[in-house]
Length: 513
Image (cartoon, rainbow, N blue to C red; front, side, top):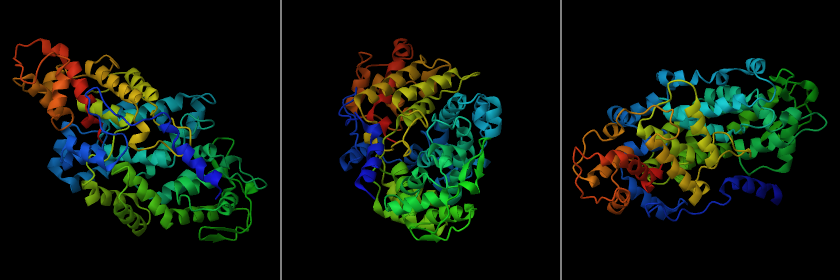
């Protein structure tokens, strides 16, 4: 591989971090460091405590709620994982009702083309909003976090050119359908889907001029990583030629486009002597899925997503073995990850992305979707556009980064603060449903001091009390001290409440995933 090819991926991977800096301070004066250093992890761990139920819910869901905490503690980790790893058995009526307002998400390519004008953005819009809705309100929370992982791993940007008719179908039939199945099946489904074939140019590959883009990204991003040669890419491009898209927008194998000739790629050899080479291409994909380097790629990325920005080598090795022993099945790998000692020890080692922060905020406040329409969802989605983390809106093929440094900057922190206040106050989006009495919903029994109120809000919203200095800083907006009395007839607290809630959510502990 050339130096140019090596650095190309590094440039793409760093695109989101342009202008990002370590978060040196917060409005409370004590933000965690942006990079996942050992010092930051120790600091974050001290902020959020050692509760393993909360730790699991912060990682395996988009944020704890009173209901999810009670369920996990009642079932125990093993039974809770069993339930979440069988999402089809989990009723999800509220989310299903909301998704019914986004009908394009459920259409196949043929029906999408029948309903939309060519190059319409309507499918992209509905898919983005459906993703936000599921992250916040679905009962199938582990499925949604795993879908997000695979959506980034086998990334197809939305919007992007040429996939207006196929991107929703790709999400439904490739990523969601196989998220808890076998990676080998997902990889083959992706390779034969018009969205991937369009996004990475394989649909334009011909016998006389095989396109190398998909062949390269298949190796570098989707499977083995940076261990391939340029000959591997060229042989792969020949083998994958013929996999293309019909005039109707659906997948087709075109023998006239297939480039024959013997191939040898990372231990896979095939004579590739006949024009109908689809079976050889599928065998190649199976070979890549079971390659030890792919096992390590998948294991490492899962550990970065769910455990730590700097993945423990022992856990990566263990999960790679589980992956291979189970013939690329994902559920055994996830079960091994979430029950590992490395996972248990990783409290404080991850920081929430903008999507996770938004979802966790709405979930913590107990806000519900609007009764009709999608104006509130539109607003939530557009907030993520401003934060640079709207679902699937990442142009390079490597998917969004999932490390703290990529999302840490003063401007990013300010956006989160504004979002917290808008949601706490009900200013924006105003369409979301709210508890009739937010204070009683969050703190059923009114404490006798203002310090006690902040403590109760912090425990309800974050799971732990804030350090004394931060509690005092939160109360500065009220002109009160932690020891100031809070009577049952104190009406001023209602006016201060949105600011108190927002400042608690601005605390470093809430940013920890």
